Image (cartoon, rainbow, N blue to C red; front, side):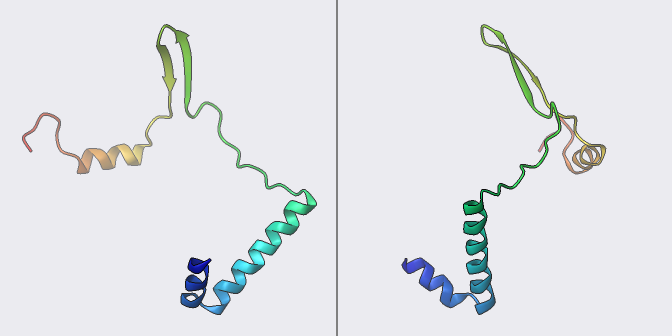
Length: 82
């Protein structure tokens, strides 16, 4: 309770009003039974398949070209002295 009062003093009137409107809208939506759709995920982005006796097949997406290039440019050469 005390934290809410302190933050209300530090924030502007518009921020406080926006938070109040957001809370009210969320309560109305939940009362009406409206649910937001979850974002669609691509299939097989990350997957772990258990084969038995502690063996897994783990699949993950490949690194993008730009990220791979950045890490090669910025990173040190493997095996070099630091």
